[in-house]
Length: 386
Ligand SMILES: [Zn+2]
Image (cartoon, rainbow, N blue to C red; front, side, top):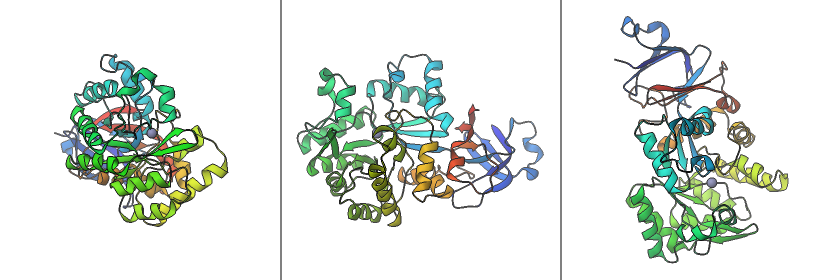
């Protein structure tokens, strides 16, 4: 028996298809069973829980491919009350439409118990794929990490001195539960000084991750950090490099090689400066990457960035030439492709019933409409309505 019937919705099955007006989505056991015109629903669904989504758009659940679960609210997540944690997860992620989030480094003593409590069903979601702690160059802790983490805990942060050490660290992170690996191939050790990771170190960590079928994300910062990331064979660039000098050919090479990019444009404006002299070259770098055919994953750096609303990121992406379907791809089909999830990213029979419902009647969906979240369905259950 189906678990849920969503009726009268405009269903955007995939960013590459026209939205279907007045359609119903029938969900059974956490999976989409049928997508049909509401008028074609038969008596078999008459007794089932019906959620009328008239005037709303249903899409596949969104992914945020760059978050950090490092704010004070996550401390002691293994024992914290469900209500407190769920409220925090709702505020930061579910209410923004995210059914999956990629945690690009946090304190694993808090994050891994949180991930386990979500996986067990104690918490409603979203699904979290965590990098646990990031791997940095030797003597390469970013200045903002040194400000956040007390000095007597620095020894516990992975900063391998040798390639063999990088291999050991990557294995340890995966053993304890990392689902992605995060490398600082270019680390802001001071506000104005970037230290690159050694290529053999980065390559060793990438090899270990790939042996385990795990993606590697790199914080590159500048041309040198981007070169290390490409030489090492990382899968995803976690931000547009913000020191853009000399990065153009490398961004084109990344695009040609199928390396994904998470822009995080709003973060630069919110945490560094709103000066156009700083931001315009970053926008241009994203345009270079996109013009070369580069594929984009949506991500905001929320958790480091204090702003939870995604409207600013959506507007920034539109400014750089991404239209509604392009941003929806970055939120749904591209992450599903990057993470090898054939049953995620679109709304169709057999797909996982992670759905994001938007408050819009627009026949042409613009990037800004993707921030107007009305409800979220996680594994076939309505877990949030606004
Ligand atoms: Zn980050």
